[in-house]
Image (cartoon, rainbow, N blue to C red; front, side, top):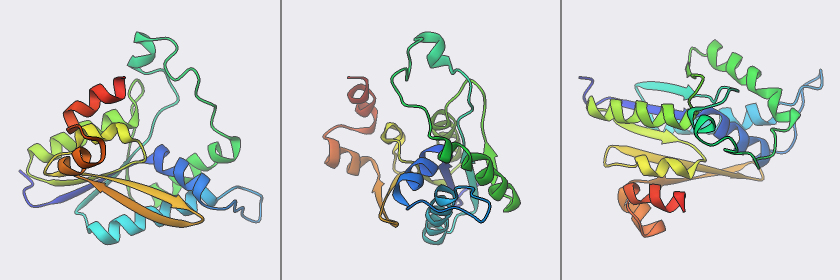
Length: 186
C-alpha cells in the first residue's frame, strides 16, 4: 500500500495538442516549432506546483491501431491528421521529459486514456489520491472521490483548469461518471 501518497497522470498528446493551439507559434533558431512543448511544460509545472505529487507519469498514444480499430475499422476515421508543426514537437517533448526523469508510459494497441484510467484505478486501490490531467472529457467516467479529473484550457497563452470529482460531473452534465460512458456513446 502507498497510502496517503499522490499521483499525477498527464495525457501527453491531449495536453500537447491543447498547448499547440493555445500558445502562439514559437520556433527556435533552427526553425523547429516549440510552442506546444512550451505550453505543455507550463501546464505541467502549474499542476506540479498545485498538486505537489509524490509520483508523476505522462502517457502517450502510440501511432498504431488500437483494439478499437480492430472492432471498428473507421474508428476516428474522420479525424484530421496531426499538423506537421505539432508532430515534430512530440519527440522533442519526450526527450525533455526523459531528461527531467519523468516516467513516460505508452503501449501499442491502447490509447493514452486507456492507460491513464487503468493506472488511476490501480493507484486508487492502493490508497493514493490521483489527479488525472487531460483535455479528453472521456476520462470524466473515471472521476471518483479519490480521482480528480483536471481539464486545462489555454487561450492566448493563459491556462485555466476545470476540476471534476463525481459531484462536478453530475453538476456539469447531469449524469454520474459511470453514466457519462453512455452519454459519450450517444
